[in-house]
Amino acid sequence: MTEALVVTIMLEAMRVTTLLAAPMLVAALVVGLAISIFQAVTQIQEQTLAIIPKMGAIMGVMAALFPWMLAQATTYMG
Image 1 (cartoon, one colour):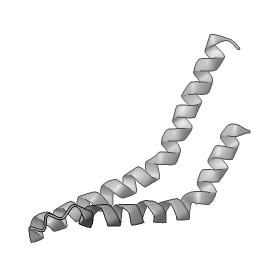
Image 2 (cartoon, rainbow, N blue to C red):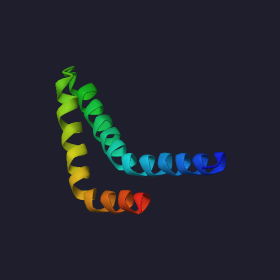
Image 3 (cartoon, rainbow, N blue to C red):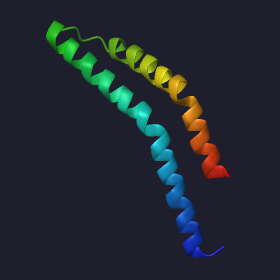
């Protein structure tokens, strides 16, 4: 294995990892922002109120996009 091949493989691995993680991170960001605005408006400062919806959003996105994520990972491995 040459150095260029190793660098190419690592760059592709980082690209695929970012591509697979991005939808879940964006969902957590959007839900977290919405919950933070809700907490600021209602002056409720409960941390568990923010974590539970984020976890639900991440699991929902993961369940909805699992076939696509599996196809991306399989394409990378193949």
